[in-house]
Image (cartoon, rainbow, N blue to C red; front, side, top):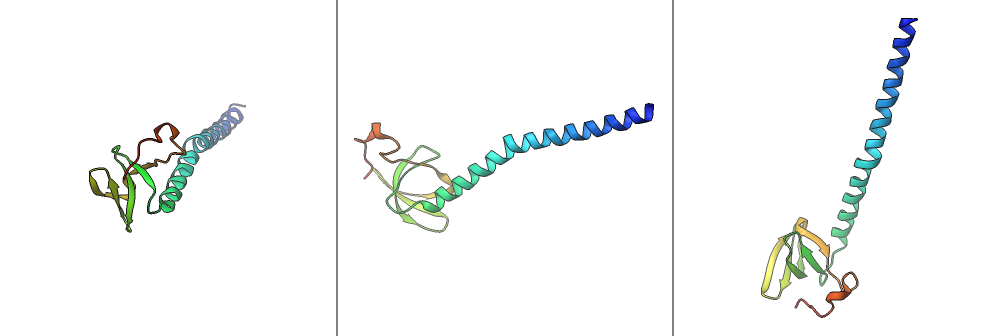
Length: 104
């Protein structure tokens, strides 16, 4: 009887471990994969003239698009930034309260 109890306990531990891994995947890994896919799609959709904000907080308008970088137009001139440094799109639709602020 002791042997049967030990074997059934091991099986329930295995099921519990699989359940924990499934929950971890659903709540941690899957959302991160969706977020990365959305970011990649966003980067590929950027076009010349789109207004952006970099991860450093610099606001500008895309002037030139290259393979690995953008040249953005800012109030004080131009800057060359890596594509990975783009944080978000800065449009009047997304931020209507800043409609009076415009980047040249």
